[in-house]
Length: 286
Image (cartoon, rainbow, N blue to C red; front, side, top):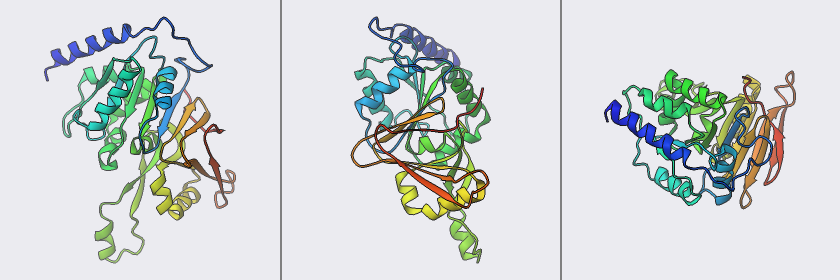
């Protein structure tokens, strides 16, 4: 796609976004639609509820102005999850929804950077971590997301897309089997690597990881003195500034594993939060 065509698409998106204004919209509770607030949604596996979609729209101020950028994990617009998410926003009368495609080995276009930095809401989709690691490793994309976040853009991560928003994340060690075969008794199946750092001083994982690797999580907390958050299926953790609120369906919850104190990393506290519960978590300073 030519640069002129991409620029034209970006301008059309901005025009549609300006026409999103709803005369019945209100500013909502404190922190909503506030460009100075830090707003993050960590969304577990499972279908979106209309309540979560409405909350994303309200917190992002999209009923007044702005547009949505969706970042597929496989960097392909044809991702079916992107289609269904667009449809859910369309049902809320939000039509300015744009998905970006970043092909491996191809430099990110300036028009894509502009779209990211000026979005009202950015959604990072679920997928394979080997694909999502690009968000953290690509310095240009990383900076664009950081700029958007610090300028008031709401960022939502789905499944593994929530994990990459943390300061640290686990990825599969692709050399694990080879290391074991070579007699490396200290080889680890998962490696702790840098995430985007949107949510500071934390590791974020989904339900299945913690259920199968709880000891690994505890060792990570003890070694790095860093809390660990597990997001259950059909569960959303909404962060506005440093206040986290859980929205969940069925029996699923959010689990927080953390050191007892800065000087007691060996002692781990486990806290479980369900629908409607709130707690504090650290977000980056300006």
